[in-house]
Length: 281
Image (cartoon, helix red, strand yellow):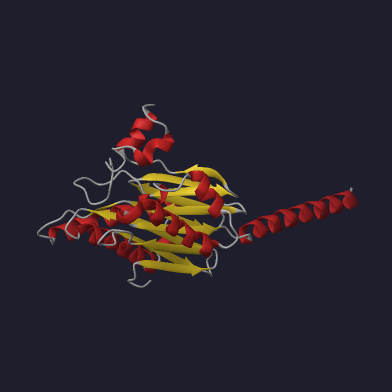
């Protein structure tokens, strides 16, 4: 990706982009890593914070750790949840190391990461960067923010749709780079044809409803949908719009075909075995 104010990245079934918005620095970072031979993808979005350039340094640190662990092939030898937990904890340690080299600023970051491998999706998040899963345009999964505003929802003080405008929305209860190791939230599901996963920073979801995200995620042209998501977020954010980052990933039918093939072979084998048994009898 280039260092332009608005950046795009696209390859089969995955589209990603980020925009600086009205901010002086780009503190959102993302990476999309793929092994087509293994049918595995790692998608990560990080939203940095901390002042005095620390936010940009923090987000870049998270992405650097994701690239390193991917290149070390750790995802091959570890169960998906363990790999993602290691990613979060090592990213946390990397931000602590970066903080020690700074005279000013406190590098902290959110993270949301998705590992697509075989027939299963596994994800983690810390902070208020989100993952959505849509079946068509219907939302079937969404991570819950680690923020005071989300806590208010849990307590019944506000409704979920009020989170973007709540004064406590930016007050996070968890993050990477703090004084204690982060408590990582895990999730996962089996993959099904027609699913679309959306990973994004708060610069996206503050300005688009879940329904709007689902409508765009269900479009055939993912690259155009991703561009429109960024454009709408920037327009609604106005002159002082926040950084925005988003990744869209659609499932492949390959896993479904493998499952159907295995089921058909099992049925054929059982039928043949049954006929042989009848012949013996």
